[in-house]
Image (tube, helix red, strand yellow):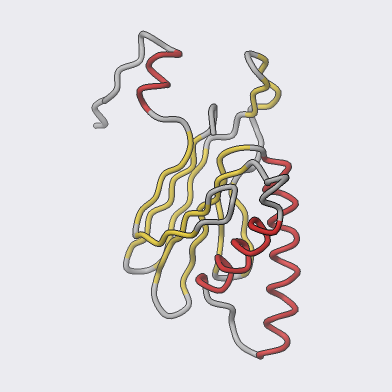
Amino acid sequence: MPGATAVGITYDGGVVFASEKRIAYGNFLVSKTTKKTFQLTPKVGAACAGLVADMQILSLQISALAKIRKMEIKREIPPNTIAKMMSNMMYERRFFPLLTQVIVGGVVDKPIMYTLDPLGSVLPDIYLCSGIFISEETTLNPKASPFSKIS
């Protein structure tokens, strides 16, 4: 999804999500303070790249479904179940897709992350990145270096 970046990393004690906060419409900057990371359950979170409005709707619906499911089974919902619920919801809308790429992850037994594309494909990994690629970013900003030293 052009103009967006979201990353997720797992470590021994949990998961970390990060995302930039800007929303752009073409060359017009709409906001610099938008929240693109979401807490879906107490132990599962998500980050998005793409249309934030689509992710906001998706996160609200998934949070509600997770609360209902938790009451039914009387235990914490694992991240793989949340990812599968999200995948099903995104695939149902494949003809009018939610234009967001999602990173979802959390900890119940062990830390795990999944990435979902707008059609609902789910891929697990220990670290993930979605959004604009470095080559596109340097095309947009010729002064940008593909790699920078962090000290």
